[in-house]
Every structure is written in structure tokens, then in C-alpha cells.
Length: 329
Image (cartoon, rainbow, N blue to C red; front, side, top):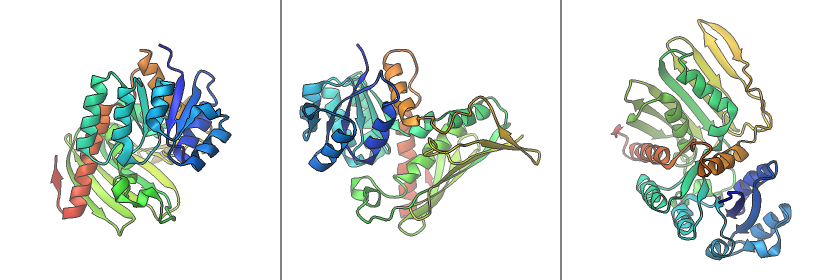
């Protein structure tokens, strides 16, 4: 089976970001799109030269008629489980789903179960994990360049000024912990190398939060997330021999980035062959990874087992913020 045709569900800003990058790979073809909003659908179709017959206001009709092997799911989190199940029913083989995957760990587990039964791959859209700079940071950790990891600090912030923005609406899967916090948790878990055992989290007003994750091997991660500040994302990994800082780690495509490594008080800039940004096209890399995993040419960089583990940690963060106590996993 050829995994080249992509159907899009939800035609907002995330879908536009994804599809803009797919244009760089002629082996990936945007073949259909669905959105309940006729205005959003029309604007998306005009931007990407989709024919009228490839646009739908009904998701199931699009899946039934077009039979796309790949789907980019770009709707609000509270709808993801429903649409992923529809994709499984209609023979979709791979879904790239915007983050966060779901509104709860229980729902993530259900998605994992029925996706496995349908032999369909689902990858949560933390596309920054595909960026060469983040992969390089993981390599520095994995190969022991920093020594044994002892602590991590993760910051994620961006301004949300429109009161109608879904990120401010918990009922559709928004909220600073569920949204920005899920990115912080994903980054920390990808680099810590062990399982989260304890969580403490506090809200800072309605648009900010900070917390601590205690991992099984004694690693501690601190995170801070906010909807108030200008865009900022940073990861600092502190090891026994050195520390490394990557900033920004989200939305890096049009920003040159380096990894600053400090060893015994001396700063050095990691200047490996990974100097590919700007233009690293992480959204394209995420879809290519999904396609190649389906074809047996690669492993999925971030699978549903990872998503389920992260969702349990995010659930614990929400519970800790609500109760004011440490939550054990």
C-alpha cells in the first residue's frame, strides 16, 4: 500500500502549518479536507489548491469517500477520540494528531486499545520532538556527554489574548496544564530516562502553572508554563559532568538554534552537523516518520505508549493543582 495521500480533519491554524510544510515533499499529497465551518474549509482549500470535490463538511463522508491512508487530525482535543475511532472504522492506517492527544489518561488508553485492534498507528503531534536540535539534545543525554542526568528545567509560554481561544476552555481540552503543560511533561519525560513517580503542581492564576516531577531514578524536573508571556520555550538538562540548554525548543523552524553546553564553568556551543535550522520543517518530519513507520522503514518516534504515560502525568498534575497535595503514580 502506498502511504502518500493525506486527509485533513479540521482546517484551522494547525492544519495550515502542517500543510504548508508538506508542500516541500512531492511524495506527500494533500487529497482531501473536512471541517464543519464552511468558511475555514473554503480558505484552506483555496490556499492549498484543493478541488471542490475534495472538500467536505462531514468528516465521516470524507473518510468513506476518499479513503485516505494518512490523516492529520487538527481539531480540539475533546473530539480526538471520536475522530480517531472513525479513522479506524474507515481503514485509515496512520493518524498524526495535534497535541494534546486527549482530555484524560483513560481516554488515551481507550484510543491505544482500539487503534491497536485496527492496526492503525497514531502519533501525537509534539512535532518539536522531530527537530534535529531536540534529537541532538537527546543524543547528548543518551551518550553520557552530560554525565548522569540529575535535574531538568522546562519552560513553555505564549500569549493567548483572545478570550474565545480554545486553549482557555477546559471543556474542549484547553487549560494551561492540559495544553502547554503537556508539552513540558513530554519534554521532561523524553529526556529523564525513567518513569515519573511523584507530581506536585500549582496554578498561578488562571493562565499559568508550575510544578515538579520526581522520577524513579532520582531525577527531578521543574516546569513552568504560561499563557501570559511572549513566546518562550527552553529546556535545561543538568548532569553530573555538564549542563545543556536548548532554547527555543518549540516552533524552531524559522529560528536558528544552538545547544549551549556548560562544562566546568566554560560555555561551548554544540556545533554538530545538525546546523539545519531555519527550515528544519518539523511538521513535515513528523508526517514522514508516520509514513515511514507504516512502510517498515522507521520506528515511530513517539507512540501511543508514550502518549498514555504522559497523559497519566498530566492527569496527576491537574489533580495536584486541584488538591494542593503531592500525587503519587
